[in-house]
Length: 297
Image (cartoon, rainbow, N blue to C red; front, side):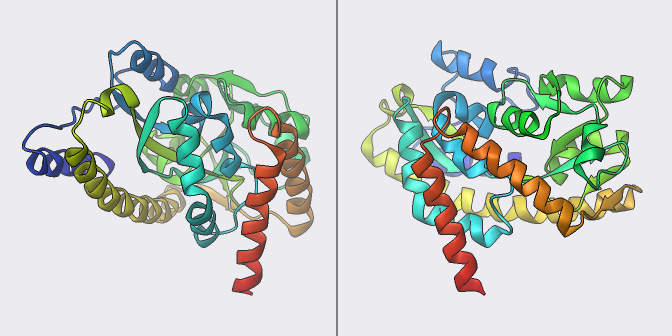
């Protein structure tokens, strides 16, 4: 769906701008990992890219505030935060010399492990993967007393095969697409975080486009990325059915153990404040979530 919608956006943009603007996509990681893509954008070899929070955090660390562990309980809470703070998050990225074409969320992130994880003690027995260069995940594992194995995302599948790691974190859809789910036995029922994403272009390339065409690109992108969000959510829900059908155990975690994990997540989020985002920004996000939760009853 992702690439279908991106190609649709390209077709519509070319038509609307009389071919002044168009996109050429390099799918499947052929341009390297997110940091490689950012380097190529700085060098002018690429004009844009699709990034998760890990990549966006390199250029605008404060946006990672919406990936604080155990922050959101449902998608309505996510929407409430983006409704109130989306412009501020975009401004942080734009201050780095980039323009946000649209948000493209990855989805709720679960633990995928070879053996069920029901408690902190269980998690401590997992050879856990850490996405190389991810300070927020590193803070969580450090607070949990875990020494993870830091690897590029491209090395995860092989490392699961060889036993270098036996646990990863991922959205259900990504776990199925990357085939990680085929190498583990269990998925945590409760997510540990929600992963953001965005498609951005360099300000340098954007500034070469006429104001009229910029407006048309933004209008088309707004429609495409709204549909992409709904599609991503649907695909993640469907992927859980695929994961269950593949024989993985969907592991519930007791409220007592969830309380332990939430406390670890809260400490990690506060620890990241100052390095990634201001403490005040984290508190604002938490207040928005709390207000939405209270209003929802």
